[in-house]
Length: 130
Image 1 (cartoon, rainbow, N blue to C red):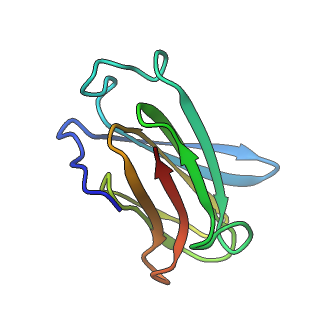
Image 2: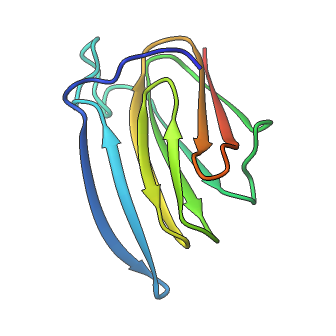
């Protein structure tokens, strides 16, 4: 992972919605609405990444994104409560069994960002910023 400090303006908002009688909690974690270069989610590319723990997750899952992009990362934990940590941007959120958590963040430095479970200490996905 690369070491990038998150903004002191980091905000956390949660909301709940029902889909097919399954409640999904979405916690969006984002830096200020603009990154240090002045880009916003509407002026910079947005990359959506979805990970389902135990289905399409693992240390060999590598996704390449361009520096200067907004990442919208949704992690679903189908079977157990977990805590998800996004290294490099230092974001962390709990996720209940059967629910999802969404992280939104800007990548402004080349390097690798590992997303891991704090319950299993396993890497779920590696985001390669080029």
